[in-house]
Length: 269
Ligand SMILES: Nc1ncnc2c1ncn2[C@@H]1O[C@H](COP(=O)(O)OP(=O)(O)O)[C@@H](O)[C@H]1O
Ligand SMILES: [Mg+2]
Image (cartoon, rainbow, N blue to C red; front, side, top):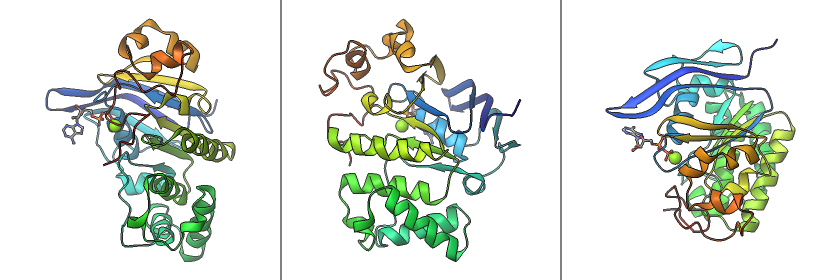
């Protein structure tokens, strides 16, 4: 049997007395699609930090592509194929979109000059921002900034793409476009783990859904089953997940959004 692309083995992380990862184990295979939901402060972004190398775990192991990467920093893990987006995009504002992608391809992906241009151009095209190639990143609106954030991760040529709330603050048609982009990336073999409060963005893409709360997984399986799980419903009482579950209007603003970046609103700072 081949080993999974990504494995977390008993990973634990605390900030003082706050446990943000409690003995978490997870295996994700090549080309898999996994959605992660959970309330604000559940530890979702921190989980990405533990996978990408931005955070060092207090205990446990992280393995990627057949090697133990627990002690590798984010730059080294990125070169191995772990690409991530950040909840709040921070591109180099005074650089153009294309320059941002070149930096990602060269510094993040470790590509040489010629290959980096190819990777940057492909990411530009894939994210649908070719028309903005020469625009300084600071001039982009929310949707384009979200797309640039995605393109920056893609330019590193990941085999595992970590998406942190890329749909937050977008309109429904914008979310639909984003979903198509992510599907296309996945169709080429890139595994995707997508943290998203906007559940209607996740369900067309992911074949597996995990709910994280207080640093623990409370549901893991096919999305319909996880969303119907009483323990998961408890976590999301009154939120968009409940609406999606009931087959109700997914466009309706969440009654009690579990995260600061609510799906139906423009929430970007
Ligand atoms: N660098 C840090 N130092 C201390 N506490 C942190 C740090 N990063 C996150 N936290 C805390 O850890 C918890 C989980 O945060 P986070 O992973 O961002 O949650 P989520 O993405 O699910 O909203 C929160 O209580 C947050 O305040
Ligand atoms: Mg977060």
